[in-house]
Image 1 (tube, rainbow over the protein chains, first blue to last red):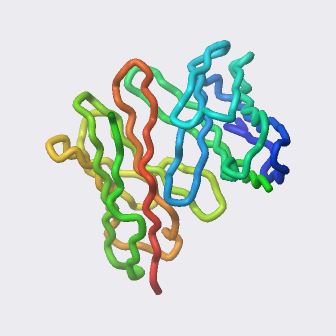
Image 2 (cartoon, rainbow over the protein chains, first blue to last red; image 1 turned 60 degrees about the vertical axis):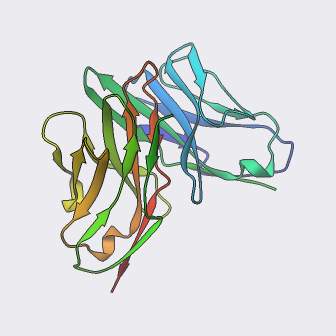
Length: 114
Length: 114
């Protein structure tokens, strides 16, 4: 199993550009999430999905869109990049079976917006 | 609103000394609790988790944590740290409500001094 994969690992954008951060998992997990990590802020939830076709907003959704057409993929779209979106982005997938609950993280995408 | 508080943003400790990283949460309902570790320039890795059962939980790399319901705490401990433990540590909680979101603390950076 590859686990949770993210591409690209690094990206530099200019203000106003758009791009899509890719995330895929091969563990057949229904629950997937996107977080951003900023110094001193911990991880903040951007969007999450409890299954294909179902998405919802997290703590900091503004400026980001998501879709979930398949169980495996959960792309994050930046519509018009802003310097405030400079951050490290982590995708995660989660197994929830009864009381068993564990989340697995991808390696992250480091995004710089100039 | 539910929250997770990591009381120390940075903890310096000498090599081979014991360490405790503190975590408190606020919730009036049942929770699952987690500690994650993030080594420099890497993603997050699960250290240990409390889902149910024994309140003393043992994790990887010699770490353990104790769930204290009355004090709403889940402090992480290690009896003797090594230079390789240099990392950032995140406490996280899942609150048993309809969306089961994972809420992260802001992190504690552990500095191991030679």
